[in-house]
Amino acid sequence: MQQDGSFSADARFDAVLVGAGIMSATLAALLHELDPGLRLLLVERLEGPARESTAAVNNAGTGHAANCELNYTPMQADGTVATAKAVAINAGFERSLEFWGSLRERGQLDPGAFLHQADHISAVWTPENIAFLRQRFEQLSQIPAFASMRWSEERTELTEWMPLVMAGRDLKQPVAATRIERGTDVDFGALTRAYLEPLQRSGALCVEYGTQVCDLNRLRRGDMREADWRVILQGPSGKREVRSPFVFLGAGGGALPLLQRSGIPEADDFAGFPVSGLWLVCGDAQLAAKQRAKVYGKAAVGAPPMSVPHLDTRWIDGQRSLLFGPFAGFSSKFLKQGSLLDLPASVRATNLLPMLQVGATNLELVQYLINQLRQSPTQRHEALQQFMPTARAEDWSLSVAGQRVQIIKRSKQGGRLQLGTEVVASKDGSLAALLGASPGASTAVTIMLEVLQRCFKDRLASAPWQERLRALLPSIGGDPVRDPDLLLAMRQRSDALLGLTG
Ligand SMILES: Cc1cc2nc3c(=O)[nH]c(=O)nc-3n(C[C@H](O)[C@H](O)[C@H](O)COP(=O)(O)OP(=O)(O)OC[C@H]3O[C@@H](n4cnc5c(N)ncnc54)[C@H](O)[C@@H]3O)c2cc1C
Image (cartoon, rainbow, N blue to C red; front, side):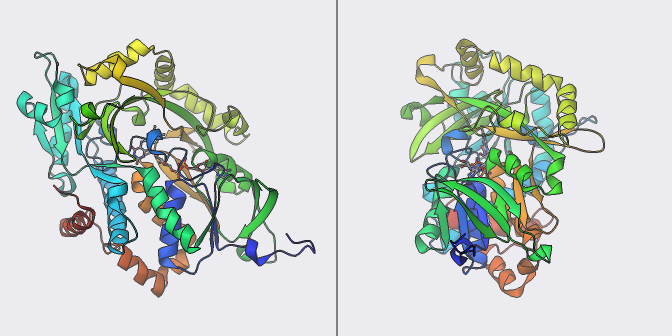
């Protein structure tokens, strides 16, 4: 606002994106590609990009393609596994690869800075879990997206696939695994910086770090559809406001409180349930070099699906390491660098009952989290040794992972704990927020395409945007799930551009 009460045109943007994580960064990149003339503002409360869940050390860096994550294919009452979610996640990750390939083709992205190939392996060692894995393998390997999946119960082959998992293992213990060689490790922090820096340098994107969005409300003029959002920023030089016809709340755990402040009626359906996490990290590069795989196991009863234990090869800032976990826990913070008051402050008359209903109907989860919180260092090491029998405690250190805020959604049947992500948008498309955590970063391109579809519907349908979109995502409009030839063409193009094989 200027001294004479008028509003400076400099403080009006075509879009304001809140949070400098992978979600806002992906949306900024997409919007810029579709219309380079847009004036975009990105606001981040911390002093740099990708410092919450998107930071490589705060997540597992798995390019989630449902190759190895057993929680995406739950067992059903009829003895078969459900495959629909796995197929959708796989297609979502292919869309991310397609987008990165196009930016690589244009010389705008260096895949070597954030993308590494690593086998995706599911490994189990109880008769019940082996039967489950066998069923999963038989169904998935019939689907074109997973046709390259291989099965083994043969020790020599398993040792070749995952030497650290097999070394020192009891010879009498049965082990089975599936492997897909075209898996990936992704440094989502490096990717976020790679999206943002060129946009910022070219002036297409204004970025304000160390600046918190503390409030937002809709200006009321004659026609609501034309009214801007007024976004209040608290930065190093005090409070000020900016305006925009479109706001994206890509604030991770901070999205729910902002969605509630926005006052849109859609916000009333939601509450959040935070789950914290710990990793064991082995920085011994020589040990890490012995494995080039992400090995996922089966979650314990009651565990939230994202707490499936896994032993992961990582590339972070060019360094190889090994990561094991996550061990789940409970903290009332919505962000790792948040406040213990986050959860209580999010309770409203509209979401209290759904929260209580979820607490009462998810006692196994509550019990699981209590047990995880009570785990001693020795018990955590024992859990690691189930995956890597030769692991020595002195090689591993504890590291705090990012905070995940699971969605609690009000429904006619009562409060429901939702374990995916959900785009919540106002009816008029002037505001959107992303809630939830998994599969998250891996499918950010698909999620942001949904934001565009719901909030930029008319422009997305226009000839110039369609032309640019098709150049960026050549398979758009087709269905790689139903059309194996299209899937093959997508994969061949992405592999050639991003240097993947298999
Ligand atoms: C333990 C763990 C393991 C995971 N593993 C994987 C994995 O293997 N593969 C995968 O694909 N995904 C994984 N995820 C999920 C993935 O990390 C998230 O989906 C993704 O990082 C979310 O990105 P984001 O941009 O929405 O949020 P964030 O990265 O959390 O960014 C949100 C940003 O908003 C800022 N912010 C918040 N409030 C405000 C405000 N009021 N004003 C200004 N700025 C604000 C925050 O400071 C933060 O920088 C994992 C997550 C966790 C926690």
